Amino acid sequence: MKLIIAFIRPEALQKVKHELYLKEIYSVSVTNILGAGRQKGYTELYRGVTTQVTLLKKARLEIGVPDDKVDAVIEAITTGARTGKEGDGVFFVLDVARAGRIRTGEAM
Image: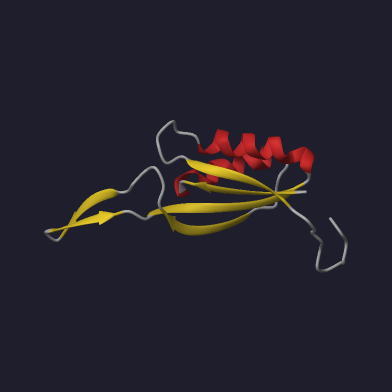
């Protein structure tokens, strides 16, 4: 089993979810976060004061899947989130040592 963690633009979330559903991946956890990366932020003028915004809004997706579905999940994320501009996001694939369902006690 693998855990895939992806950081994407919040506005890409609906498209990524749609791509995941097309591949019959329905289990996903989403957290709204702030982060810094290669995008480096932007400068904003608010009420005459210039502010440097370096932490940008992102969506963090966590998806646990069997090994044979990893490529499908990565393809769905990259298809849904890619705009071709810096800041589209990043993903990580991690090994899961143990997983199970709380309700049934079933090992996954």
